[in-house]
Image 1 (cartoon, rainbow, N blue to C red):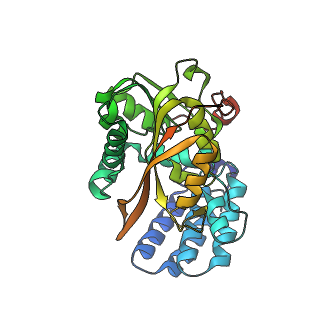
Image 2 (cartoon, rainbow, N blue to C red):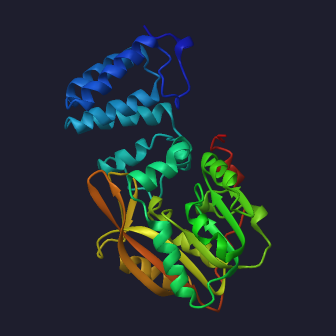
Image 3 (cartoon, rainbow, N blue to C red):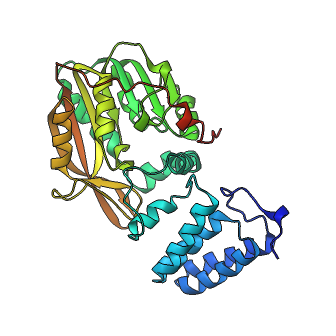
Amino acid sequence: MFSPEKQMSPTQLSSGDLLADRRADYARMLAESGNPAAAADLQAQALELAPGWAAGWFELGAFREASGDIAGATDAWRQVLALSPSDVFGAGLKLALAGQSAMPEAPPSEYVAQLFDDYSDRFDTALVEKLAYSVPEQLSAMVADASGTEFAFARAIDLGCGTGLFGERIRPHVSWLEGYDLSAGMLAKARAKGLYDALDRADIRFGLPASAEPRAKADLVAAADVFGYFGELRPLFELAASLTAPGGLLAFSLEAGADDCEWQLQTSLRYRHGEPYVRKLLAETGFEVIAVKRETIRRDGNDLIGGLLVTARRLAGDQPAEAIERSDSVLSSVPLVG
């Protein structure tokens, strides 16, 4: 039976109970062989031995969902949230997709940070070689087109810089390049490449850290494959407007949604956005669209993911309220890795 001394941190992938782990391993084998209902039954047995195992409850939800037991899946995801209120597993997103809670405008910061911390060691290989990820190449080419003969920037800001895939493309054309990311693991990989003049950790929904100011405004702000992890884009466009000098460029990518939909959470737990919504928000936040291209940006299994690649120019005039501020209360709750 479960005993208090066997309890583990909710973020652990191991239950802390050897027998429970073995049953969970068998459950995964059953799921992979096409029998999610049997996998769910065995996972439930594992959780009888380790009822405080949040990761195990999340897997149980996945097995039940795959077997068609949506009610059982939502019960499991609610248990995840009870054990891990910070929602490092994204259970709240799953509940929203199941129609059991309001659609969130963005995922929990802890979920995003953990997702990319776990992914950082294999990120470049998995994304570029296995998923045919092409946003950095396509977006940098659009930036070059928008720049004309002057493909050079005094200061560029790479929002959600990750491991530096876009930074690699733009570095030869930038005098000062800085990057911001929520994941400490991704920042460590970017730092090892020696591309950036400055790197810092930031949840860009809440602005940039105080260390980012008071340099001159940037003449390029980029977000390659970043805004797709947010539903409501207004705070991000307002941040970009506060960072970009008049006449400067904003370049970003999104997953393309239907024109009659502003934004929508997908089963991938990423968001897609409609082009009219994007154009409207850009105009309202002081940008003039230069180009919008619809391109395949990567594979996801057997599916080709269609994207919007956008360049826009910052108009002169009143700037939105500054969005450069330290949000220690937000970042302090997100565990550092590496």
